[in-house]
Length: 401
Length: 233
Ligand SMILES: Nc1ncnc2c1ncn2[C@@H]1O[C@H](COP(=O)(O)OP(=O)(O)OP(=O)(O)O)[C@@H](O)[C@H]1O
Ligand SMILES: [Mg+2]
Image (cartoon, rainbow over all chains, first blue to last red; front, side, top):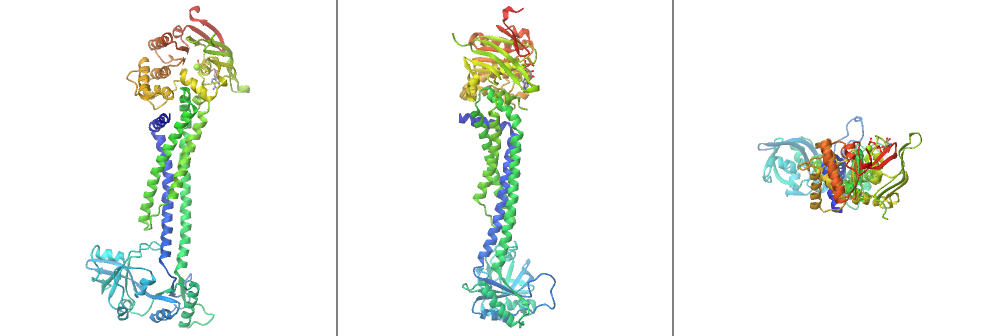
């Protein structure tokens, strides 16, 4: 008997292609939209999470000038120099210090060229950033002191200039300055704003100051605190030292800023969870729209189906036999739609994660929930109108307009 | 004495209520024994189809009693009535009531599916029934590809296929030319004579009614005449 009900259900599905197609489509849209949006949302949260975790220790970034809105007030704040970095390194709470001086320059190798961010810094930069080398070596102390013409490439720059070739020992020209490639960083992917973190070249900071910029300024200083130090304590200590060095009177405001990178990332992940929440809301709406679609198809076909049920009852079908058929029909269509929807949703999410350069983070729970909801709508709205019709006297069902 | 196959005891069927009340059947009583061939005639709207629907367990009387083989049908549950329809009754509707988008063969097979008959036997029986009504070669056509008369014959084949105790035919020849009509009547007569199937048939044509052994006439929801066919003239 189950076999017969299955057969009847399949015949009905195949003979009513449009109705079946629309039902399946409703489920597909609902499931695919939810899975795609939630998966992309989770992927971008995962990325922010990862960048928070990459900063193993408390890292403070010290910059000249005040972090404030609006036009600059009065004369610009004095820059830092390498002595400031050295003084920060002397502090007992500080583990590592990496001064930075950045610029954007063309980098050329043979016929290949690119324009990229060039950071003048020290060997400690890689420690502060918790960024291992993929090949080659870090700057040596002597190279830092002498301002040697050596460089470390980010993965994007390496790929652009060298493709599959071995860059170590090769010479690249950074705005006309020939530098020997001594190392290549590991790939880091997109940053919190989706920027390409691997599109960069590191050179010793003295090289940057003397050979490229022609000044002795330091743009910013990254300070890694000892693990045991609270970041609030660290910030106060760094502020006190810098105020002293810059001879700021009591009562006067700072002309520099100290930012905890972790605070920054926590803020970002907050923004991100709002985004993820929005995406989920949109997803829920699409699920609802899909559900209403399914509901409509099911209800619109009730007139025709009520007559069909009347015919089946008249030739001897019992209520149970009719319901078994309709239930199987609804389940088959919903499951079919669900499976296609899951595949489509995951494909969209995968495409989206590549496009946005974020991790692909499918969640079994979301897949199950989207599928469950759509299947439930399909089954409920396929089954209950059928049940109402199957309980009528056959003549009543046959006369149904 | 065995109970008659079909018995109406003061059956009324009332549609609507108050001002809009329609008495489609008013206090109708009759009996039909197994093996009879009854023709029902009467003007349009006189309650013929209403009576047929009640006999066919598709509808229930508002007042009075309908007994099938001595059993009061009102007292039966839904499923028991479904079983009666499945095993004892074959209905040919005035409006055919075929399933759209399913072939003639599938339509004829439908009652057999609910009887639980295995596929090959079911298809052989359905083919045989279609052959009997002259639709060989049309098995694969669906109702929209068939003429009114052909659809009517599919509906007749569907009623025959299950080999019911009673065939209830509501104007089975209404859409057929008289030659086809006579063929169908001969088929029904043969089923009645050779297989002892009881036949109740509604018709507007004397030529068709002539094939029956008994004639009942309805007027305004009442049974106004009930005679053996020979007695008429
Ligand atoms: N569902 C219904 N609701 C209200 N009135 C109905 C309904 N079905 C039938 N009637 C009324 O009951 C009466 C008998 O109808 P019935 O269909 O039995 O007539 P009939 O004798 O079969 O007529 P015909 O020869 O035209 O088929 C008619 O007056 C009709 O309008
Ligand atoms: Mg009628």
